[in-house]
Length: 198
Image (spheres, helix red, strand yellow):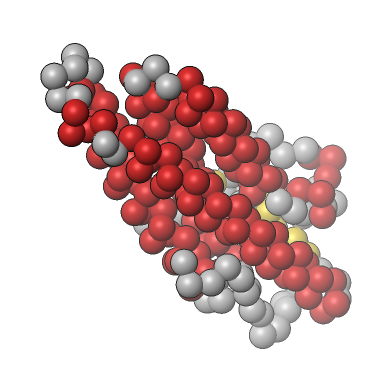
């Protein structure tokens, strides 16, 4: 990964901003707007470091299982385990690419929307990798790796929750549905606390 700093830039504030988790905020001053953008940049700079850390550790766990795939061809669950192994291999490469895109595209005009969608895609892929590696660990009766993967899965779930709820404490004016045009997935906080809306 070439960088870990998210830098959303805005030339001018027209009074409101829509971010990628569906929250829209209105600002009465340029100072408040700039403070919000600084918080957003800081949050995602930290988030991308967390995501990279998770990916790095999962790559190590993934490589841990590599030697077993040349030995266990005669085991009854070899094919199913090998399918999980191949799926993880593809997901790791995809997450690596998405992390670079997240940094590169954060300063574009739609950066405040793109980074949310990308961070959620990356987080969900990392969670999927944890589940797949957990199935491999289960097939190998490797309880230590299963515990590590379960803990990482919980940490990623917490990160997903923080991404989805970013800004909910800053009194958004509404919450709309964001559709990711590339994947067709929707990102909307369905359990928004209505009392936080000004």
